Image (cartoon, rainbow, N blue to C red; front, side):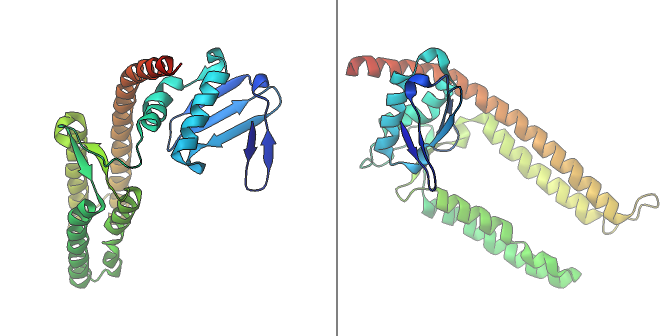
Length: 245
């Protein structure tokens, strides 16, 4: 196998491979290791048809006993590659929605406009020019989501079909409001044993710790759900592979 990079070219004998790691992040990453060499394949550097061929070839050529992480990779990357149809428009199921760029425009442009107006009024009212940057964060979020969404749209699970995700977003919303209220309250309340800047820093630090902890818990729940679903994906992959043979 020849892995051509921007500056270097690596040639790897598949018979000498002693470890193959399937990583299901992003478009998929494959790491190969021999006794003396390493090689990494980033699937996002290839078109969809070539990605599927690479996955199938390595899955069949490398002994399964030295492959790691296949179940999650199969669920997240391999099966979607096999089911991919470039000419088919995404059709959401009953518990799914179709996310399009226009949908993000309708959801986030009013939010950007509102934060801009609130920032201007707050900057004028309290004499804080830094509040003029209030629309920056929602603008970055809007551009990121719009760029990550294909032109034809993509299917995502409806929040009403996932109570855990819905409760997670509700927690973030309420927690953000409470944190902002405490920071706003600190401008009018004097603590003889604590100055305002220290109080604001403490509130921000505690808020960040709680958000990170909740995100970690939510991430573990999603990971467990993917692991359970990966068993079915592996069975479907092997069944289709057996039919092709």
